[in-house]
Image (cartoon, rainbow, N blue to C red; front, side, top):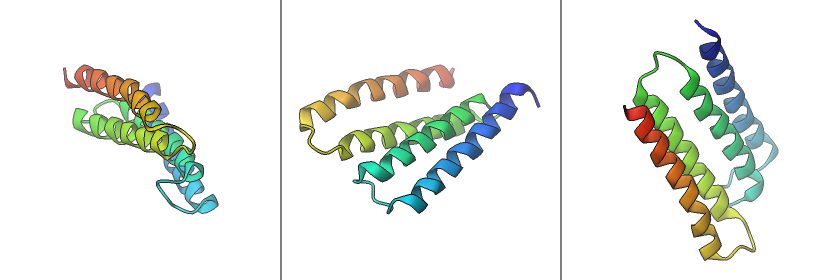
Length: 107
């Protein structure tokens, strides 16, 4: 295993631990910004770790990427006192990044 694979496995484990830790500190509710901040951070670490692991099938990397993207959009949606149009505008760069990275991994 090379150093990037080790780093990837470490980030995957840390992402899972952050997600579990958030579930123990806050009630699990996808419309609560308190829990979703832990879920978003944990799944971004998880997806980043999957992307660093070599010899992993690309569909695993793409699945982790889209799971993180959907979680970020749910987090943006869960923010209180924000107009819907501002939330939808926040979805655009998340979707653009997810599509761009999907195309990069697909090749």
